[in-house]
Image 1: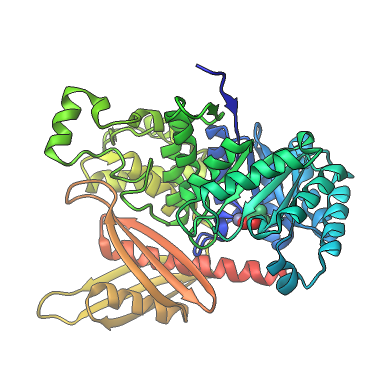
Image 2: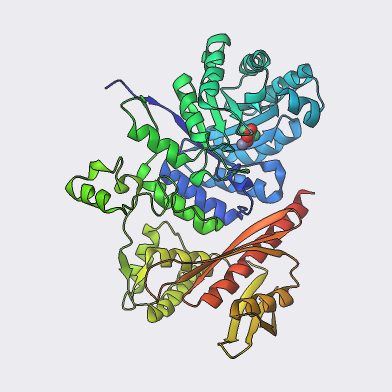
Length: 512
Ligand code: KIV
Ligand code: ZN
């Protein structure tokens, strides 16, 4: 077999991914995702956009201080102020810190968004790269909306920023407009016509508006791109970005015609996907490639028969290769604190003494209610009960009365900024009554756009999992809550979303 060329994986889950509606994460959550990306062995983690807000700045700084292995990138517009702020956060990563600066190069963006002439854009790009180089030799430059950029001008910008010192040049399909054949030709054109192209790595960054982001990234690699920018579960602006797991597994599965590999530890793909869902509440569709619940399920009789005879009849990759394990019973009510702590460590949770005590107490309560406690239950306990401490709104108690002859009534007690408050409301069913009571206590104005109920594990004693989507003005957030009691899960999800909305508003205030 021909020698495989290594393609760098640049993960932008924490930057472009976080731009998904409802995906905002706090600093601790970003750090947890970054630790999982470290286990996944991605080459670069784009940790945020430091000048965008205090929260983004702190997250990039903490990740740069904590994560070892991957390079840490921070996004900066092509401006001195952005780059200075970016490096202030990135410096803690030392030589692994990467300044990622960008400016749009397409006619449409230059004319309407930037209101700049091409020569001025070119000069700004060169100035930004030179300024970034005064901090670090690790500089990436992106030509935003490259796919809709005049090809000759694109080549001119690429040559100029490489001359100015960029060691990676990114050619994004910002609006998800291209198709594989066209994108292949753009990358090939740059490879063939930019004289100094060998002094930099070509990166690609595809959005999924036409559902072609993975296919386009593969075509680009075939044309000579050496870095692919992608996100876990394909989350990102609008229809999302190139899905990391789909891209990586395509290379791994089709070595016969794609002579490329990545450094990704593929058995960490499923844990990464689940962690992101747990943190953001953005669920993956069941038929999503690689990480969807049905990705390895064989339903039709003829398929099941084939699988029993020989797995490769219908399976092109093994579930184990992407880290999928059937949910195994991990703990029961007789399990001790030691086993509990060890299992949490295996799942990637590094809790302090106080958090561990809280989690163990919650686990014991759950183990009394449920015969079997699974990994997914532990995820829910830690994320819902333990890592959500500094929140404005907290649920204390709920009492609900309902039935076919009764008008549903909910009495809800909460803590708001540390003060205990209580109210009761009637509703069209117990969930409606509960959410109305919370709305009254929190004086929330947000509109409930979506309410979804699922179960985390099997059986009637399963933990119910509720996901809600709230919108206020142009901000959308997702909240998640779980409990063996579906009413309590609904209340937790709603309160989680209100806390996220509050966090977003604070972030916005910080950035003004
Ligand atoms: O989509 C895009 O063009 C971007 C750049 C900032 C890289 O996200
Ligand atoms: Zn993007």
